Image 1 (cartoon, rainbow, N blue to C red):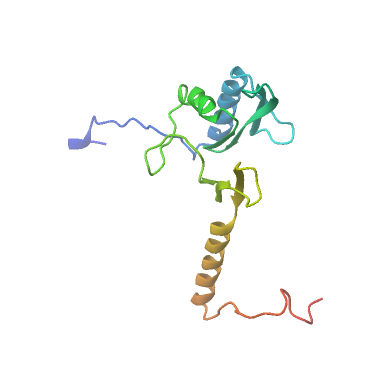
Image 2 (cartoon, rainbow, N blue to C red):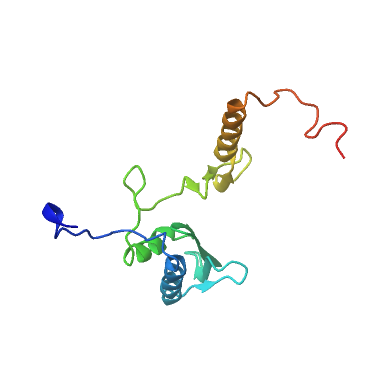
Length: 165
């Protein structure tokens, strides 16, 4: 640059997703952190981390930290403590309410929440639902079909045509 704009500079604060090795570098860095926190990577999925833990009542279980790009889901009886340890090392994104972490509402496009069965002992169970994902997918298909003057049928007797082979 020349003229009036000569000299200014910018500090990039964010991941360089476009760089060829940035994903591998981030994964290696996070792996060092997770190992330092006593976690092991799952053999079936390198982005699932676990470590043994103990409940207040003395029961043994495993804490899990699931990582997908820059999304983290912690499954633990002491999830806030685990997330605090990560927040001490990394700047966590805030949700629309300004919280850096808390009970999840969405993960990888799925709705996440708690549900209590009518005949249960008063304990809530966690669930994941694809409701919003499927509604969005159908809306996308309908929009694309509308562009070419077509539409989805509202009443069908089967998922495939009768003569399909």
